[in-house]
Length: 125
Image (cartoon, rainbow, N blue to C red; front, side, top):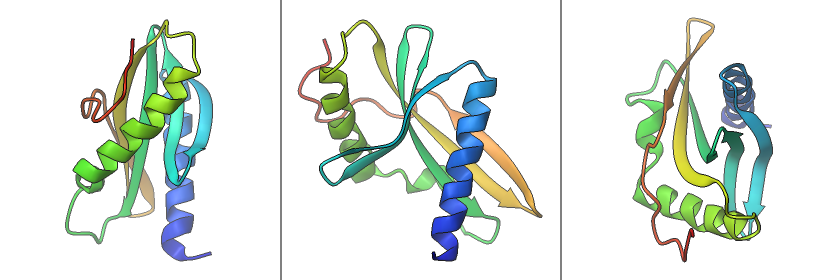
């Protein structure tokens, strides 16, 4: 496995552990719809949270969350819309980004709630 893939998997595990400690219930990991993927789907209170995890080592030129561009947001929203259609619709959808930065052997987490709005979703309610 390539080193960046391994780092990404570790980052997703760190993000899931972080969310659990914050009271989130992890519903799905690596949820796939067609060729699209959502890293983590969780519930916290009345929110259904779709989480994109970005992990980087300290030798990058930009913050991990900067990699969640418009196209990535749109793809996540499309997959989330499909997932949401198969729920009872009682939860409020939200899109978060968890940025995991590896610096000097330690993982630092930046959780951005409501990181972006729903894009191109067919319908939420």
